Amino acid sequence: MFLLINFYIASAWAQQLNHQGCAYQGDVVQNKPHGKGVLTCPDGRIYTGDFVRGEFEGQGQYIVPNQHGILITPFGMNSDKLKNMVLVGHFSRGMAHGKFKVYQDGNYLFNFTFHQGIARDMKLAK
Image 1 (cartoon, one colour):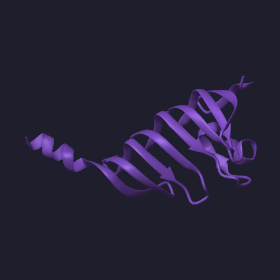
Image 2 (cartoon, one colour; image 1 turned 30 degrees about the vertical axis):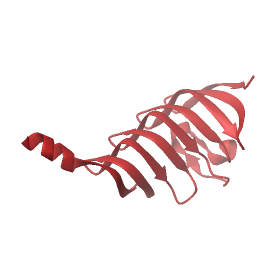
Image 3 (cartoon, one colour; image 1 turned 120 degrees about the horizontal axis):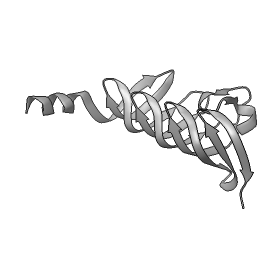
């Protein structure tokens, strides 16, 4: 029973915290995002999805703001190339990894394939 109580105290839903200059709301373990949550940054970047020990891990959606010159670290590029787009796919260790569908204004535009945050392939949507 003691271990269960300690785990319950260490993890909670709907906690809010400041994480890397952004506001986080979601599952928290040991004061780090862990589980499902939403990370909202002052510059307009929003990530909704899975976290493990404070990093993007698993399925997620990443919204790139309509601003110039913001480094979009998980994708290894700046916002000028992905401005005002929504990328949906898999993350590993905080980086885009695998296939992503890319949308803009609700329209499915193309697929990106990433390997550890580096774009490997792009194909237009059919």
